[in-house]
Amino acid sequence: MMEGTNQPQISRRDALRVAAGFCGLTLLAAGARTANAAPAPPSAITTLKNGRVRVNLRRVRALRKIGGVATIGSVRGVPAAVVRTGANTYVALNLRCTHQGAEVRETSSGWSCPLHGSTFAKTGARTNGPAQVALAQLRVVRRKSALTIG
Ligand code: FES
Image 1 (cartoon, protein in one colour):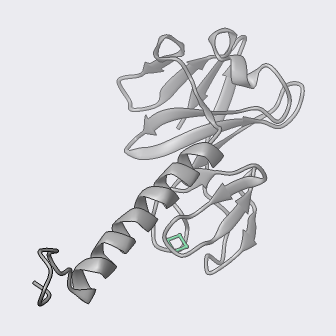
Image 2: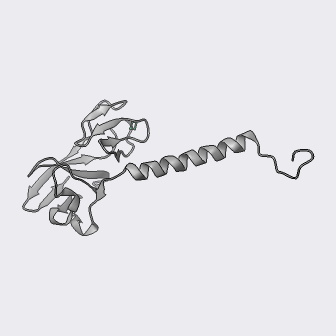
Image 3: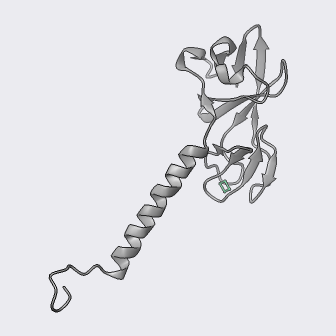
C-alpha cells in the first residue's frame, strides 16, 4: 500500500505478467484471424483401418477450386492438410514443421510456424528458416471423387 492512499500497489513483476498475458491473448486472436484453412467436414473424412484417411472431394467445398486448402485432421498421428494444385492434382502435407515439429498454421501466403517463424508456400516449399526443408508430403491416391491420404 502506498502511504496516504488506499490504493493497492502492484509490483513491477505483476505488471509485466499482466502485460505478457494481454500480449499472448492478442497474438492468439491475431492467429485465429489469419488461419483460413477450411477444415474438411467430418462427413467427408473416413479413417481407414490402416490409418490412412479417405477424403470425399464432393463434400469438401474448399477443394473445389485450384489453390484451395482443407485441413483433414490427423493421418497416422500427424496433422495434415490437402491442397488442390491443379484441375486433377492434389498435395497432402504433414503440418509438422521440419525444424522442430511444431504444427504450422495457414497464412494468406502459405504456412507459418508459431514456434520460431519458419514459413512455407501453400504447397509446402520452404520460403524462410530456420527450417531447412519443405513440409513433408503424404502419399495421395485419387480414385474417382475420393483421395486416400497416407
Ligand atoms: S519448430 Fe518450426 S520454426 Fe522451429
